[in-house]
Image (cartoon, one colour):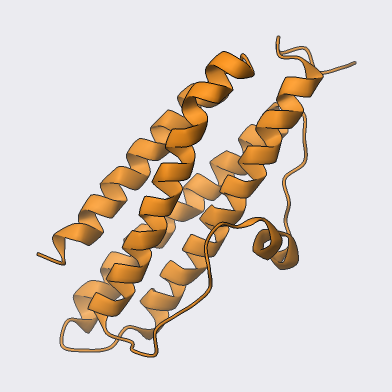
Length: 157
């Protein structure tokens, strides 16, 4: 039995190409946030250790949701580190400092990059590919990232 969710195979393929990039970005950001959680140092260690933990837990749920959406539209989610590194828009560059402000600035840049990527796909998913479900889904993801970015940004004031 074929995939019968009302979206052509060609359109589902086009959407999945973008979703696998998003999944890769989410995985890289998750890993970088885990790194911040594990390695943050300084007088604010405890509070930032807990803060980064709450962020990576949210990202873990987001990653799972993106992978499941890829499956819902009939494609397979990438699941190797090599695939994620090949597909991501983000970099693994890290500053040599382990203070919270350095981590916050870098993670904020990554969230903002993901927000821009998502924002650029909301309309095409709906109007060009007729996948209103994925368009709606990523709109919610964008809002999640906007909130996480706001939480990070608030530390920089």
